[in-house]
Length: 176
Image (tube, rainbow, N blue to C red; front, side, top):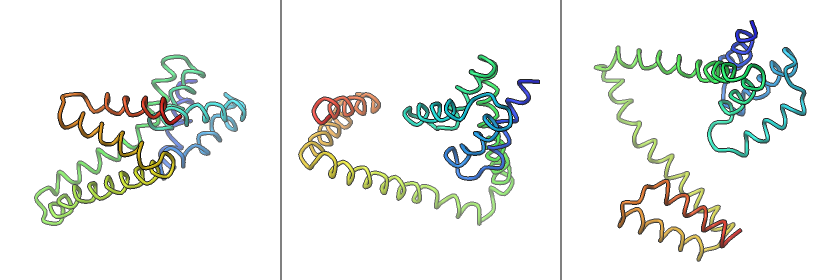
């Protein structure tokens, strides 16, 4: 019964919550702290703080930790599956609809706009990061790190993740 309750504690907030991880955190807190009493508010706040400090989606990190805290390894797996389950079901349903109407002129025209929209969003994200970097670090360090990264990415076969790690390390050493 504990596994079922753990599943419900994460599945229901993720099915009714709209807006991703940060939007469902109060719903998860209500289940974990208020309804089931598996943690205190202070413990939940500490898990949230740790989750915010680590990379990747907050909801899955918290689900994994809380699931493990409540029911060990199987609890972590169940909580993470309950967290990603609603999104997975919605994606499968949407893909089914898109596949059914794949020859429709409307679906084809909608699909043709996906890449340009993603390109604009990535461009905006890049511009935002550049602007923030210039404000926090200045022109010279930003241009130097950017130029070295561009050379490494274009002139060598170094993996982009390694270039990012090198940029982070140089920023920590010289700017921190």
